[in-house]
Image 1 (cartoon, rainbow, N blue to C red):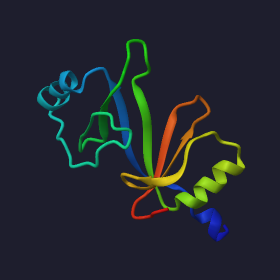
Image 2 (cartoon, helix red, strand yellow):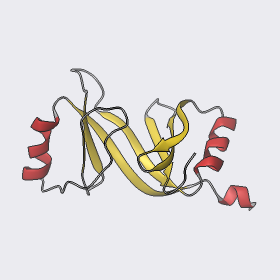
Image 3 (cartoon, helix red, strand yellow):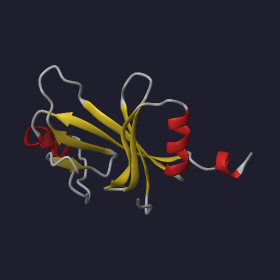
Image 4 (spheres, rainbow, N blue to C red):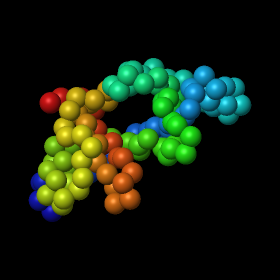
Amino acid sequence: MSDERARGHVQTYGHCLIMVQDIEVSKPFYVDLLGFSVRQYTPASSGRAFLAFTQGIALTDGRAEGHKQIDHIAWEVDDVRVLSDRLQAAGVSFFNELHDGPYGLTIYVADPDGTKVELYQVGAKV
């Protein structure tokens, strides 16, 4: 296997961002009823209200009635630049090109069904 083929792969699950109608209504369900723990986080780059949990999900405001609930799913990768090149060469649709995100160097792409997938490399910068 070439060096380039050995890089640019998903390493660990990052998070699933769930879009809710009202974080203040949803927070007690996750914290008080399910026992989730709020974790330290960087505010959402979109400016929307945001609440992250150690259990691997985060909530954000903005869900309108009838709108999808999952905003995106995220994974940490070992080399986001190599992965970005591979996805572009394969004709994958990008929501956002390489940029400095809250977790590191980040891209957002669409899976075949249009679900937004965030792929980020911790510590890497544009």
